[in-house]
Image (cartoon, rainbow, N blue to C red; front, side, top):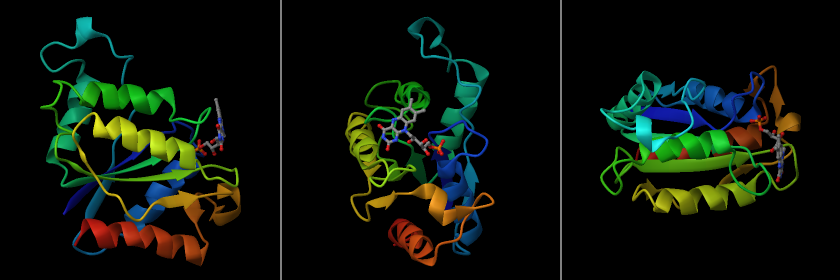
Length: 174
Ligand SMILES: Cc1cc2nc3c(=O)[nH]c(=O)nc-3n(C[C@H](O)[C@H](O)[C@H](O)COP(=O)(O)O)c2cc1C
């Protein structure tokens, strides 16, 4: 199974990226997990959304197309998802209702340093994904609050959090 992880944060020391990197290491043998890169994706502009769009967009969409499932890890920015992630999803969502996201199995999780763990962003992400006709995994709703207390040296170390994350693989590989 080919799973692609997408982090909503570009930060080098991002907790969300650290969670996805930890998951890459813990993926079951049947899963090959890689990360998609959002850094070079330009702001969406319909004028350049022709012939598959800019190279970074083409690569992003191709990675999604080849994936059996996605895991999106998002921070919460002002109660919603970061613009960087929304922008990437906007690119991936075209052509409307027939994009690489259509029927794609997508598990989402959220993380922030706050106690609420970005749960509002996660709800927002699920709503956005519903507009792309992707197949959003309903359970488990993985929220990692106080992220700085469960991540050390770029990896999740807290056993309860790790078990929570493993549940995502359980669902995706069912
Ligand atoms: C512009 C901005 C807005 C934010 N708004 C929220 C928020 O509404 N709720 C929250 O819990 N954290 C908020 N935060 C904190 C981030 O969620 C927190 O820094 C998180 O760890 C960032 O994710 P990362 O470590 O993956 O980069 C905000 C941070 C930024 C930069």
